[in-house]
Image 1: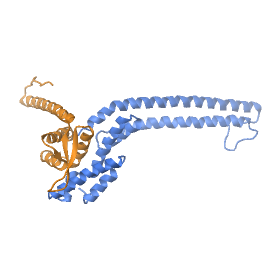
Image 2: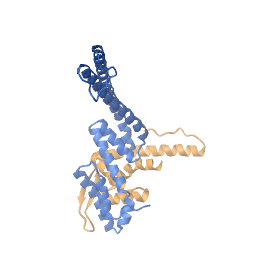
Image 3: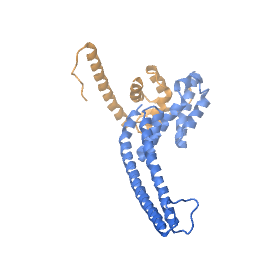
Image 4: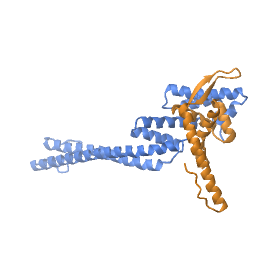
Length: 115
Length: 203
């Protein structure tokens, strides 16, 4: 079950990082694995797919301190897409929590947040 | 757990080897990402071993890229073979277990195919019968049930041969049509399921 949850959430995790600031692969991988246990190798195929879908783009930036890095940034469509799935995620998250809480307390809540 | 990848070079090699079906440019781009990953990791003080352990199995990683490619291919050109390739790539990622259904489907298709071919063989046999009926000698490799001693026998042999040819040809044509129908509905079915496959892959 947790594998499926991870699969669905990885995309939004990656996009939220890139949305905050342009990031390179290694730091995206590092940041995410701080929070979730993932095979870090599965993140690059995701980045590639997001690039092909036009949600993110990349540029190479030289660095004095280390090797050159490929930075990812959100495209305009990517920003829209991110906001869209972010909204869906929040609603979904809230509804799941509400349902769980209601069932654990023994009552049933009809308050579903629609969207 | 058995350590299958010893170092960065081997990791990249195994990954590269398994990126079958992708063009050279794609392979380069993909390998670049992991090369950079190693370079950055090493520059931050991580060991090759640590980086490799955290990246995971290069074979599994390659499967993911192959799957994405197969999906793209199937979307671009919707053929049975493309969608089947996508399914197989998905199975390798344990995304879904269609082995059972696929096995049954393959058996059905194989049976149709085998029968279609057998009708050709039967038609040839009928034709041989017709030929034997008019030949003055007996063919060594072909034996007619009735024989060709009398003219009556020959006539019967000829008619039976003709009948077999006609029947086999009709069945052949019927099965060709059946095959086309199976193909048509396979495409429809797979098209409907392509969306499901895509959704199952979202990571």
